[in-house]
Length: 115
Length: 112
Image (cartoon, rainbow over all chains, first blue to last red; front, top):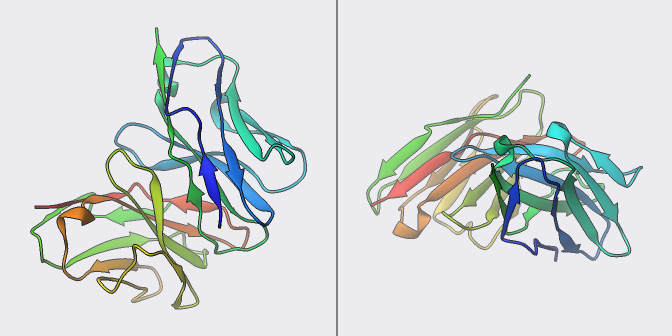
């Protein structure tokens, strides 16, 4: 069985400061990894994904994440946040190479960007 | 850009009533999913659907739930007799063979 742990439930950060959201997973098989963002009262939008290849993945809105297989982590970073980055961020995994497999989500990290 | 759509955006129903939540997946996708998010909690997998049958379902997806693809475009989730604890945001998603899932905007179900 897979599980995803997001270590921080809330992260307050000042505008233009960097932010890192931590994600660790456990799985008995290789996985695909995803970060989704949920803005207030909206659905889930894919920020970035790791399927294979380079372990540093760049996504939309200036976000990037690094896959670390030995530490089973997929931390999300942004060097300089904007007020508009205030949202909830979800890390998720699915089984590698298996289309149609469920996503297992972490508990989410709420980012509040302060002016 | 193609997107997943869901209707209605908000559904209010009384306990014990049947509800049908509707989704239109991206047209060339073959895999379909339902997830739910109870207020303040994580997103939970309910069911996946491929080739006109359920591929996988979670413990949440009991006999009160069913899914259907009644035509070439719609994908529905039916709850036969709603309970208060079914109140949640329900997300539909679809994917192609690469497995990246695209989510709809969700239907907020309120059971009173």
